[in-house]
Length: 432
Image 1 (cartoon, rainbow, N blue to C red):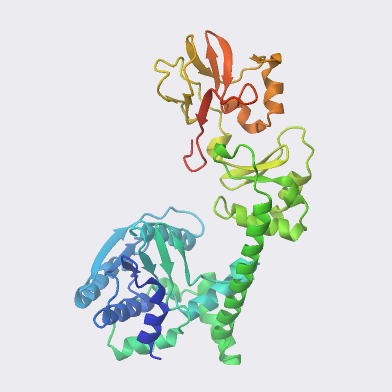
Image 2 (image 1 turned 45 degrees about the vertical axis):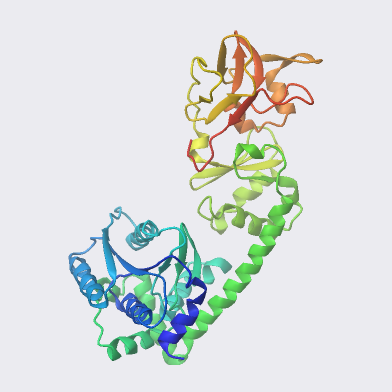
């Protein structure tokens, strides 16, 4: 099977996508990918094809690359969009440039479209070796995914099983030109050192080394898929039943505590993967401290962009804004038949409008409320009895009528009653 046929077969599951977008750097791999797709489109019914070039502006020679991409796309009859992105200064410029590039490319996708990148088998081998030397686990050693969700569409790497030499042969056979990033020849960068020094030496000893490394990555990807299935099962058993309407990621602690330490970490990695950067091996002690902490205070495991907070026998993920003090509530509720917006704290609405001058406040301490058939109760103790998470009590809306506490958001004052005050709290995604 030739390269074009193999590519067409690989892309078969995405033939019905509303569009294909090629990330065109102008280098060998993306140039060959675009040429292949353009040629296939003349003989097969494929989604509309267009290309995007990201210009980082990190080096002067890169100013000529958009011109090369424009010339290539014009010759192939493919629409091209050139985007300039800013890369913040500091350490790990390569990683930050890659993140900026992926954000920009994702921003060009329409719902359901596929972004196609030209990474090849040698790139995969390099990535796996690089991650191995950084102590990566199963997920990291599975290398780059051949396909994965990328909101609002899908990211595809259809050449991931193709060695670079095959791409070079194709380019030469079709008279293609491509640009070379001069920084790729600088062996002082870790990835370039692996590319120019280590992988060639490995290939001298073992000619199939890149293929075998890529094959190992496939095995790791399969192992990771099994670990993900196990994590889904374990997390299903830890799904909480109370206060899910808060809209915050939450787990019941006891089902996790029954698992082995390795399964606990596996489940938590799956739970946290879309919420924060994964902690390295040295920082997992924070999980054990949180799990085993006595309940005096509010134990927390601080991670990038937030923390996993324990309240009673539940774990809650709080993004950084949730950890900030809540602004004061409005001084009154002039239109109680309509929802009341609470600055930084969502909004509230009433099941029915009680008599009196209404105001929403937050706890200051010392509040009491009258419960039907139970008399006057201390609010702090009653919130504890209702299981209200400790971290949320300071921002829990309270309804006062003529200065008297008459309702607590989301909680019924008596069995069989509906809550008078309904709260639509902010979520982590809303960033308060």
